[in-house]
Image 1: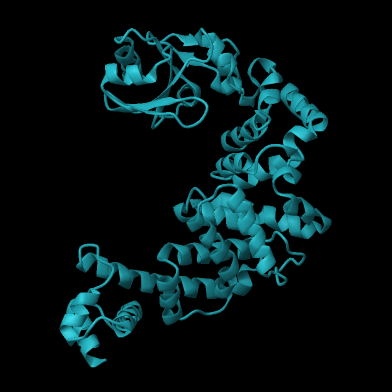
Image 2: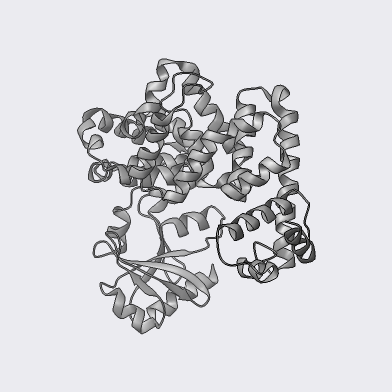
Length: 421
């Protein structure tokens, strides 16, 4: 805590008053060390403050310009006070657990009982002020995200106010732009996808941002299958970092939309188009979208034996991580459907084969200081006295396959293989 207060005092040497606020204070109250601290500063001119501090840059994107930088080795983001006082600023924050501030002398400003709610593991609207969600209905999704992530209950009055708002203001929810829905959904599924989507369903929010998932309730098994897959993914998050990619969770959420069969045998280009449309409207980047589609369309390929050569081709076509993720996704789906006894051994054999291919490709990087191949196209042309052309590319692709299946394991081996062609 001491060095956080030193940061505040450093800022106050410029004659600007500063407070620790928001997620920083909430995390400190929960015994968690924040990686980046959030500050409120009584300065309307962040650019001048940056010059006086001789650190940081001003990010003017979004409704509240932020000064981002580092003071005394501590990364920070600073926002101007909303209102004339710190109490005014805290009153604008949506949840009481985020409406706490710490002064530079270590004193705590907590006008809305946020510390009490943290101790009692309760999510509550700041000051029980329903106008906070009237001003921005997407705060409801943020509330559910915190409830899922922090495993806190939602205060009874907040529950009542939110449900009443949703009943009376369907039009407001319908007018929220898809990209704003997407931004909050991506945050919500980051750590606790099952709990978050389950909460969204309990508040009848699915029709507003994922109608096709709501439609699955016409066949209860389909809807429960999606939740079960997300539940398995969430349970494995803490032990498998690979699963924490956006593509992994999105594949679990969207893998069955547009289908009417539990095994997804009726998937077609239309259902892929649905996935792409949703993710595009949610402003998900194209690389992640491609990976989601690849996972959804390929994970069942791992239900049967896959040779090292086939894995090698897939890795070269997509990427190492994409194939690893798709194989892990297949394991999650198998577990969610309780068919591990049927497919478990095949999946483990496939995992072994993939690991051998990846190990060989990694050996190339170790031997070449990070290069993807033992030889470049120019080196191949010099070795074989060739001119540029398609044949050079074919030789390089063939060399990659030879490396992946263990035929080539060194620069000398690569040269010998090329000469033999």
